Amino acid sequence: MNTKINQSINVGVDTGKTQLDIHIRPLDLFFSVENNDKGIKKALKTIKSHSPERIVIEATGRLEMPFVLACAEAQLPIVRANPVHIKRFAGAIGRRAKNDRLDAELIAHYGEAIKPALTVIKPKNIRLMSDLVIRRNQLLSMQTMEKNRIQILPASLHPTIKPMLTTIKNQITKLEEKLVKLIEDSPEYQAKNTILQSVPGIGNIAAASIISNVPELGYITNKQAASLIGVAPITRESGRYKGKRVIQGGRAQVRTVLYMAMMSAMQCNPIFKATYARLLAAGKPKKVAIIACVRKMVVTLNSMLRDGAMWDENTAKN
Image (cartoon, rainbow, N blue to C red; front, side):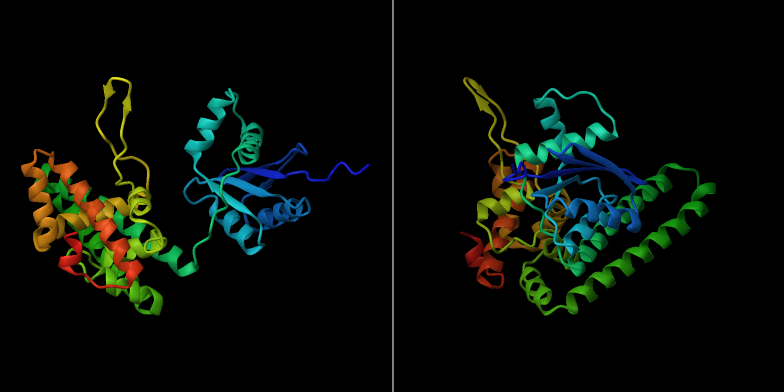
């Protein structure tokens, strides 16, 4: 009798800096390889022989990316799973014990039970653009910290800070130049960039962040766009309890960039300036008013990219 008929194979991968721990469910196979090109190649050879339905790995930041890209190149079904979702799944099934083997087993179980959607790997240029935006944000944070230090530390220490500020400023400029060149070298990105930057308040960085991190914009509904960025208000109500509406989830990096873009837009864009003033007059806190304006901007940008239309104040008023 053939016992392998209709058997759904799910693979869980626990990522470490130097090692990958892999569990194949329901075959109960476990093995470890080094987290390098040689180890990944060896792992994929074993995994591929079992024709998995999906391979699930936690999105840990960067450590998992060589494995993810290798899976995509080998045309294997890969899922970069949110660690929070896996942690909640562990709590739901009462799993408390933790080691590398059990973590890999848990991830495979999560894949089998939840069946998360497969990850779509972005083109190389889009990934590079996203990395440049992330690095620029990191440098801006470092710049802010150094500027704060120069305000509070004695003048005798300022010579140790000023060279750092100059270096950081130069690196930010270089990153911005690379972003501009990436966009200029691609007709598709250039078309999107032209539409996005027609909005007063949207500059090179905001446009690059949207192009690289929200490629879906222009192909989804306005409600989906707001949820994707994380600016759609969520109602918290139960029985007589009436909680405040909050925002959560979404793509925080893009939301941060658009928040900063809105600070500029409220100075030079009459539509957002008027919306912000109206919300403040209605008694809304400043931050709530800004987020509402960001949501309006996201919805407007989504409609513009969908229709291939440039900024129009009359359209934006609706």
